[in-house]
Image (cartoon, rainbow, N blue to C red; front, side):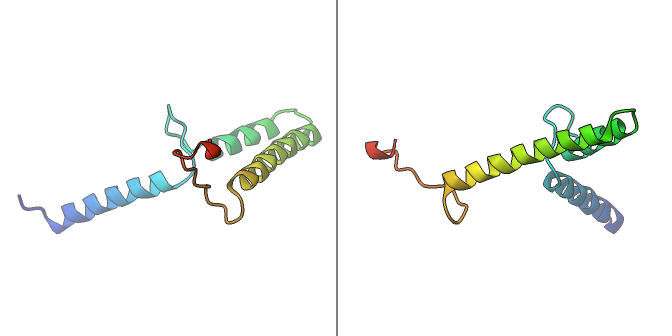
Length: 95
């Protein structure tokens, strides 16, 4: 089957767009939406309401601290270098 240059360009463009979409952000499992963009949109919507902005900032800061704590815990578990530690499943001392 022959394809034209135009068709080939379109196919390449579509496949490239798919790859870029897969690489960007964390996707919601049901909707496929970028969850970080969803979070940003929610914050934007909250800022347009009559919410106390200092309260909102403190809540977001608390969430950021939670994320930082989880990152610290992960760093402790994986050790220096950030890679996962190999566990020898045949050695009972490792379990």
